[in-house]
Image 1 (cartoon, chains in turn cyan, red):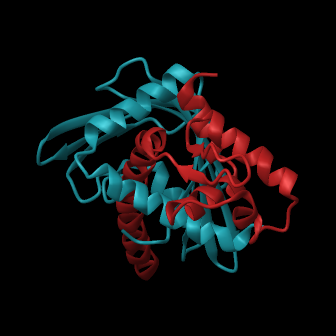
Image 2 (spheres, one colour):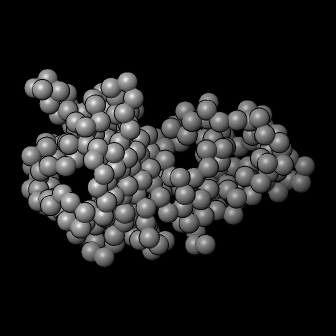
Length: 161
Length: 107
């Protein structure tokens, strides 16, 4: 795992990710806005079926073909402000009805773009459902995961006081 | 608040995450925990109360020292989910990074 992605829990109903890309904002935004681009990265190297109607009120559906099967995700674009902001819903079809809202913000500085994504759950039930699905998906040793999380916290420790 | 909410709230604060990281190294007294922080002992005690309520730490019975100990149980499910989430998105963003560099060259 690279150390470029920072994941934190800003409140009890949100999870936040921050990642910097060495490219102008228009390009990073564009890579989120069309299937021909999304297909190259969203599937993490797995084949991806992509349908999207990239406009407010439009929907999207991604199907990732992993070695252990197909996983479908869908949502609706609520807000689109090129090249700085996308608000969309997100739902894993394996757990229908559990919908969360993702807010993506793109900020450029010195030719580099910071993507900040905040996923917000409507209710504690939504969040707990998502946590439970993550646990099902994860066959990894949970203590290794805990170590990784705390190692990161350890790293954060230098910046608080 | 349900238990998972308390765990999330407890983890949302950087000072509390640091305290947990300190306790992952072994048990410690309030004074030892407070040492690296530029905040009062009272403030540290408040954070410890939040962590204790969330079931993330337990405190010794000895009145004078009351060392704090990490209880990883409730933390595990959240940590595991966060780690899984991070792993997925790290893989995605690594791909996106490569792809964007390719697009940049083509421009």
